[in-house]
Image (tube, rainbow, N blue to C red; front, side, top):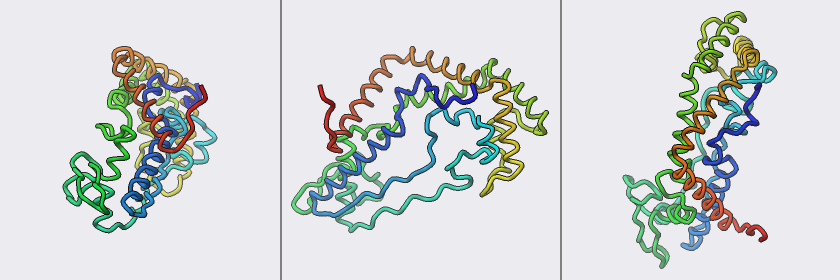
Length: 276
């Protein structure tokens, strides 16, 4: 397997896709703006930050896999920041009263939009909801729980632990030893595994150096020569399937909750339900 990008992991149905996360975010911003307008406050939530995200969960899970791409971009995929992530745009300036409507509190110790922001204030003849308009929007989308609308803890844990277990599995360490020998033959003797190669501090530069591009190309070629990604993916997926079986009841509830949140997002965005 040269690339795992087109191969979903077993845990994927229990984790938000980029499109689902974006849809929830758009719905929340719509509901917040609508709520603020009820209080007579003209407010447009800031556009979300646009960090680099792989097209699929597996696209760079095991590092670079395309020698041609690696020869051009080094270890940093196209579009990803090489050094620092730019700070998000500052939120719009609001009056103190409008800030209470948005967050439900003027207490700096209370997390904005959270249950600690009790609301209840009267603004413009209306009662501020718990958590303000942020809290109201999150409650409407059912994203006000422990995960705050992100991935469920059980799914996140399975996704992270399977990768770590696979990395230590003898089947994977065996092909990684072959990878390391291959890298040594190509003039890169210092790396025990691809994560060490891609994480070399020498690559923290604005543009990829010649040496980085050579190392990344060798990495991708050695992965291909020894089927590193194919073995790693298979072992990773096997550990996930074991945990999915062990947590089947909890994960069924996670999948149902993801679907419910998407339905609520569609309603907030005014989307028509599918035809019967």
